[in-house]
Length: 172
Image (cartoon, rainbow, N blue to C red; front, side, top):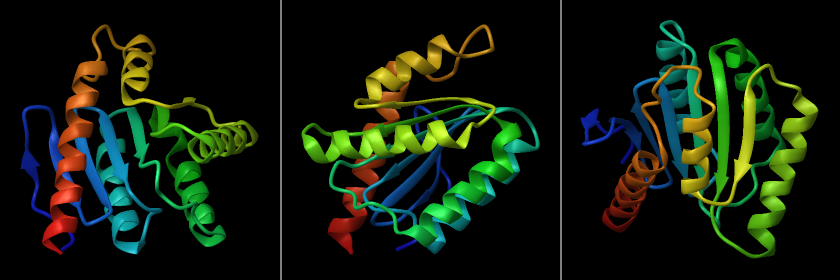
């Protein structure tokens, strides 16, 4: 499958999708959904979107991780750290949502929180268990008078992204 053409939905524009990942842009917010750690194609698409939008404005980033996703290997974690350093001055806030309950999801949220604490980034960041919690945080921490992403918008976008990825997986 791979790079789907840009498709504008009710909330934002879906700019990339494959059987494990989806990227949607809503204003100055880049929202990603992942069923597995980033692969080369997804990471290239994410970097291209970040580079294009970072030229124009400070960004919010939401990374939604499926509860069944595996943990990235060391090489992938290094790529992620490098990208976060490259775009650090362009990011206003970054939220991770590790969906699911139970020990595995809680352990992944804890690992991400610890890694983020050690990174000492110049932007606000937080890890959540639900998309709704992340949406509330995004709207409360926006530096603009009105945030284009709140809990209802983020929930709708996440639902559409899951549907896209699951549809591609069924078709593939």
